[in-house]
Length: 439
Image (cartoon, rainbow, N blue to C red; front, top):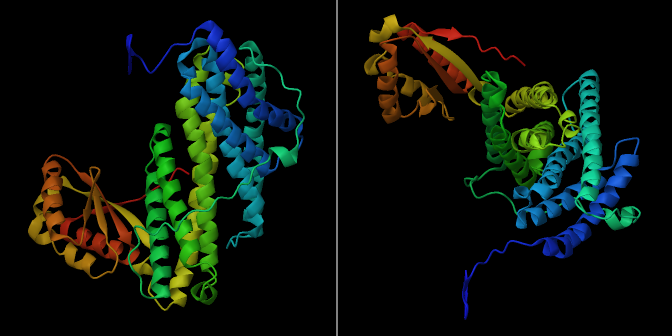
């Protein structure tokens, strides 16, 4: 609020029709023109566009979306649909960009998989890009039609690759704020490998625990995308082109698996964002019957399950197998570093065997190993090395065990998990529950 001689004046003013036409639409027309020029080129293309063209769309759309939001377009009947189309285009376009990026790089990635497996992946990747490229073109046409309805002028400017395209790569500072000081380069390699293996196992446990499609959210996609992005950055900062990488060339394969999983998850994040934020809004608009057929809910759900989650897990598992080879070459016991997960059932009738005195030795078992082992129960996480945390966990579990059987999850280095599972089977009569992944 501004104070002047006539009294307080609001910082926000509602535009009248004349201001909308002369100010808002005039500025929107200018800021949207480059996007429509690029769309004309995109729509005419028979084959896949290059990454630079799709990246340019991304930059233009972000600028238009910011402009529309500054003016509150999402709360205006006339401009709401245009704003939602821009938002929809942004996230479908990101999916395509990441897919094209993988396609451009996949042959140069150092992968420990057969040519048949690689060919199958490339085929399914191309099918996915084609599917969402068709959706993007239809969204672009819908945006062109809506632009004319709201008063934007059709541009006659021709596409110029040199003028339109934007530099893709950006540079950032090393993401080392959470890193401990590591004295030896081999320790650094082990540290990054462990980070990769731990988070790969956590992601695998999440995927295998999915019961409904609603659990595949943008929040989850972003969580793991961010994790593997950090691992990739750490690798490039501390291992790439170093003596340790030359000594253990299989490390390059780990870098490839991380990169592939990262970009696939970025596709997943874009699709989940579109599904959660834009699909329903666009479908509610009275003129959106055409758009509602472009990217049906079931199409996104199928892509997320059959391509995004399936191949993310596939490449992370391949990285796990490669990690075993690296630890063996380092002369180390891979089972002390490879993460695994076991689910155990504790039976109500054995409650007297499950209390602090007979169960506490699990802390000694976990303590033998360098890496931590965790017990998961009722959305709580307990470090099995910690006497204090176990003294909290055991009574919590016993409260429910007095009424019914209890399921717990043990996660950590394979050797520790196996030993603790056997201990609980012997002392408490626990039985192992098979982890079945629907994917």
